Length: 375
Image (cartoon, rainbow, N blue to C red; front, side, top):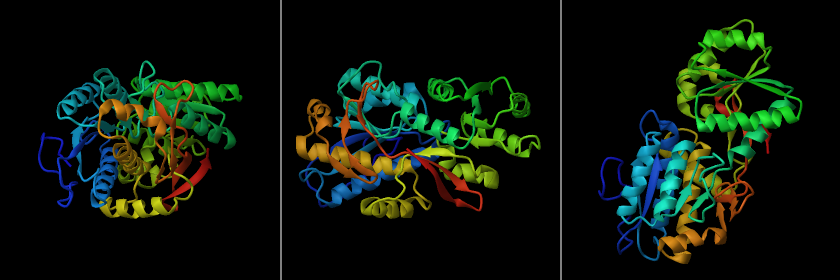
């Protein structure tokens, strides 16, 4: 795996017994702040594990598979520039990325210069402005996952929803999905701008509006951590549900920052209720690498390389042919059978659909996740 700071060092993902020039995959991940570093670390762990397994099995027709990794640091311009650089390094395709706005920039650039892009983990529906054959995605679209989250809220009797927001295409899109679904089922949604409200003022607004749930559509650790602490400490809000549909509580940084205050906060994760044999095996390997429970993002990374390896073995390394091959993908992933299709309203080839669940950290055992709802 090439490091983010160097162009062409030897890759530890390439084993010595696979002769021939490597088949390169460019990989994008947030590995430094302000990117979500924990997500980037899990994504890269899944990508690299799968590459090692491909090479242990003989590579791509005798050629080793090699990751060329670039750190996006949650910067769309940096991601677009990385796609250009990776194209110049003769990668067969680009994979990865966690942040939706960053993935959108990468997808646009990859499409413009003719490089296939398999998006691992970003969910923004409008990943590209226009339909394209060059881009495919493993993560579910935001409109589907966040509607399932809204169903969970309604089923839990939470109808007066407040969202703490920051300016972002991603957060605005999520707010729109939630509002449309909640209001069509008798719920209400109010927006609270965290750029204008302190955590204490936000608590005052929750009381004023008699909110039954507060959803954190904001970054971590700021302002999410101070908001959670303020709400948990406010004696007027003992019954309010705090939620984080974007998945912040999945990662160890959340638990380290908030401890018991970070438990009981439902979030979306893209895992089945039970993993099959492949998922169990890969999960054990990922746990050993990461030293903690692997997130759904790590499984998305592994599945990404599994898809590309199958495409490369079956159809070769020509970029145009790879882009044409998404509809013919049919593999068993860690979380179920993976197929790509055209989904109404989605401009890229989409796995329709990955498993989706609403989960939280168990207050009685913060390292244990409880499944609260499935969709």
